[in-house]
Image (tube, rainbow, N blue to C red; front, side):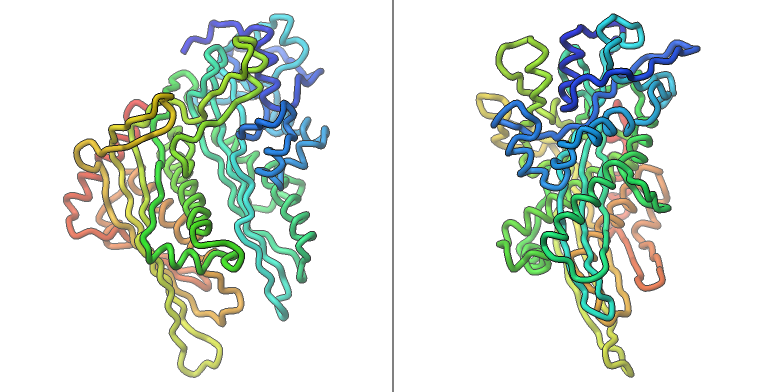
Length: 471
């Protein structure tokens, strides 16, 4: 990808508009001692089709992003996301540190050399989800909230108005407030907590993951000189009838939603967890997970202001073909309780989960528009097809038990453990023997369950090569 193309005045306007902020004046432009290629930071935007109008705060955005959209109506917060969130203007980024991060201002239109680039980055938010809330009465007297901010750092070829790479940044958090919170209080609590996850907040607790830190990590890991289109995707999450039954009962809003909706929520969380684990541990860009494989997302402002067409130019977020298709099957989730002799209210609680990981290449057919997938047929055999087993247990009185949270935590541990081991080319026999981790209250066992170790070795090697070759 050439970096000698000067971005035009109208293209700059298009980039800035994509952030929903417009151009920010008076950004500093220091002198650089050594030549570096520029990457233009265009800000933070919601990746969502807003068909009801040009305004970022349209009804569709407010409905889809109820916790973060209100903050984008605050000009001070919008300015922070544009000018402060990415770090210092001109900071070195990229794997080789040969690039600098800049953002546009009034000097961009004067043809300043620092803007001589055809690459831009944007943080696209795909969800701000309330996963669950639960109140625990005295003596604890506390309201817990589990929530997620899912986003992707998108690398864009501005000249072609094309997304060439995407890197997931997912923040899953558990917050709490003293006492029993009213629905209105919980709503405001979640808005505040999700803004803190996105912005970093003032009280940065040790070890907490928030978007600014993850953004810096990703920007420092990208090889901007050798970008290739992301062509790996977690395409589907499947579940057996038994798993669906558990999901329907365990969902924190099970009384208010049907089993189909609960299953959809669970698959959304699992799909994004798998996508993030693969991208982080293999160090590759990956197409975003969506339950609908052919989901089209409009990068609306770019097309409007590029003036390439009078009509809005629609761009698919998931550009490019899928070379490697990864799927996860939830085969079973089961909890058991065993009373402990000599104790009135103490028992041993165990959880067993079985997931299957599949990876292969598929021949796809599409409708006449070329965007809606009609069928996908496996080409040859699976590159990888293995069962993963996770077990955990703890002594509990049941006061803080929540099976839904427990499984979300276990599946993230399981996926991180599995993909990290293959990415680092670790001894695979340890995966089939299982790994046990003991903590103060809970014990975990993760294991690859296979009867053919030689086959697992072949598949793990092929999977690793498929992910790391030409990425």
